[in-house]
Length: 315
Image: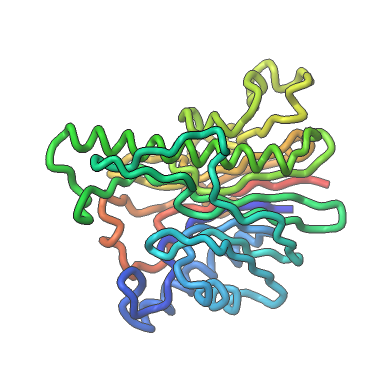
């Protein structure tokens, strides 16, 4: 079984403010995405940045027969949302945006506006008779938007403040995602197959990513990994250390390679993980464009500015 996650980058039908300008550009984008998915051949793929629900159906229609789709009912202000492409049938078990009740509202701008929910829904599904439980997410971006829709700050003080606001939101969203993971694990990570897929918009050692892991001290490659303890019931393991170092990135931001898309596995699943990677298996490091602070610069570009991140699970 191959599980993966991929940010499809502005998957809209043509004609709107965020998608391709015409049918030709839309067709080129779909063809580029479909070619990668066909080659990757995942059993289950979590996807992000689906702007039009019908666009995901258009993409599925360019694949071979038998694909199932599911989409969150909670898009952000641009209309983008998370979803799944799956070889097997899906049962939705959660589609949520809410922060835990204990979290106070999070400040998001200089005017003091606050939010009490994630900007995009987190969607969880069950697959199979001995169910695989999987959630897909897209946490708050590090790409910042300033008052008036600007992508560049007036000064460094404004940049710092809005970077902090984004971090507050991403941390709160990670906390909400961890709460959902606890529900999916139900205190039995050794017996339940649970995976969290998605664009976390931060790297492996980031505080927001670490929130998702649960009890510390047992990451892949550390001495604690092979020492079972009570924390294994609640832990999630990031498969990033299984990705060859020479391809351990999923996006290039201003020339800097970043692994911001992640696959996290429960104890039962991670013990059966045999390989992980970015891009396409066997093709080496992903080739990606370098992106800047303005997402509109790539409007209508074919393919995606992210590479898929995947893990192979043995029987």
